[in-house]
Image 1 (cartoon, rainbow, N blue to C red):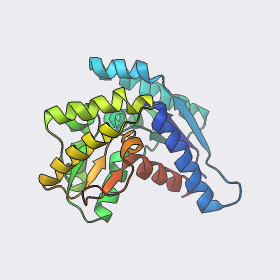
Image 2: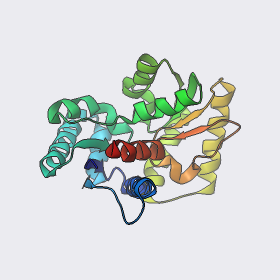
Image 3: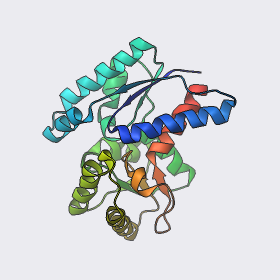
Image 4: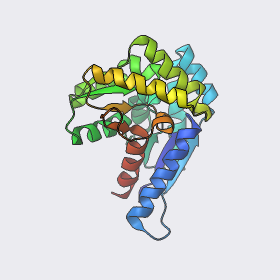
Length: 231
């Protein structure tokens, strides 16, 4: 079994899901008392969030690289970034550490392709929805067209992530707001919705919504990591 190096804490609410899902998959695959060999570097997310809001992505990248290198030194054989947004610097981390990095967008794309879909909606932080690093990868590498909410709805989705979900707050009215946003994406012709922030599953889950399949990147990524470790 390979040793996974998890870069988490962004937020710890979803990193805890990674730990549970990965270990569940390993136990189901191997039985008995088996569990995952993994190392976790957990950030103080407030420090990273401040850098994100300030647009200090170079500094954030250096901190992510340092975390990845610490995991490598400790024995990690493959890296898993437990957040969608910080895949913005995934390539830099992979180059700096020379370790394989399991990209969350690639895992999501594989699940989308398995469903035979070509046009999906994307919910996530405003950084993930606005910036090209995620959408462009899906479009150019996998031929998947990506639609994001309108600017005002992006702000609402982003606010709920940072001010509620990352702080363990789950509100029924926020779920309704997300359902409304997803209904509008459906009207734009999407065939499914990517839950492109690892906290969104805390609010929505991974059941179908408005007749659309939901792609929970937390579960998809964590399960892929577990099976990769067993290869």
